[in-house]
Length: 300
Image 1: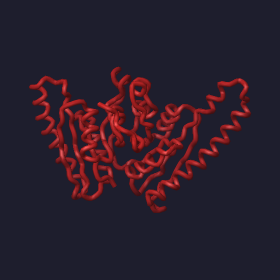
Image 2: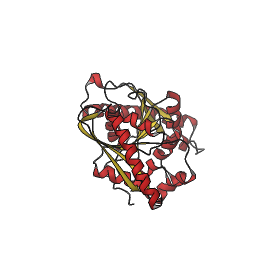
Image 3: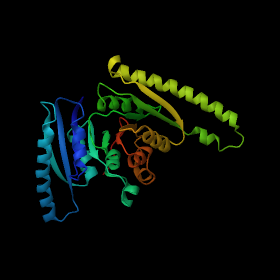
Image 4: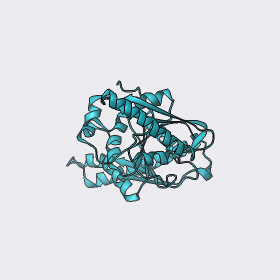
């Protein structure tokens, strides 16, 4: 269960979905839950002061409604800051020792977001706290989760967060693994179709075995009883990670996608994007983005 959550509330109509999702997340007894709203520093001083006052009132109303649906003992507080949303969210996540940041996300993005990233993407780049970006109305716990799994060290943290966000009784989880090597091989005329097919079958079998080992190890590491463990629907698909994940989410009507990010930084990241960033913009479900452990925060 989570011991500290930071919930970013932008006071738009989508905030109701964020608040409703929070009430369905597992919180430990005595957990700390912080509602944060950031007023843009670009506002003129009189408007800024009015916005702060309005935000405090609105957060108080949200907190009162949310408290009715939280376990007893959860400590609920509200904070209003002035500044750049991504920077203030990242700072508050550090000061509150948040284990998860929950925030909303819309659909199509403005041109500025395409090049610089959405607020959620910028928060991910600034820190190392997982981000749950909410898009769907919350009608209860997640029932159709999926995890996009890379065969790297980051898979441990990705699976750990999956078990936290999707508590027992756990539904079946779709495991998505993408391989684009087939398309790289197809670019070379000297590589025959038979060789390509043979490689595909070899890689598919190897990947399935490795994924099985990682799933089993994650269950043991999390000390999850067999009766509480999810069943897995694992598939290895060929193509770019972006297209494979997008198509799998759409086909299976996934309500939560969990995936890791490799924590790339700097201008190249901002303008070229990452798989996690592209998926965050494109899929129609909630997305839990898990940064790797030990990655330093990006400078403001």
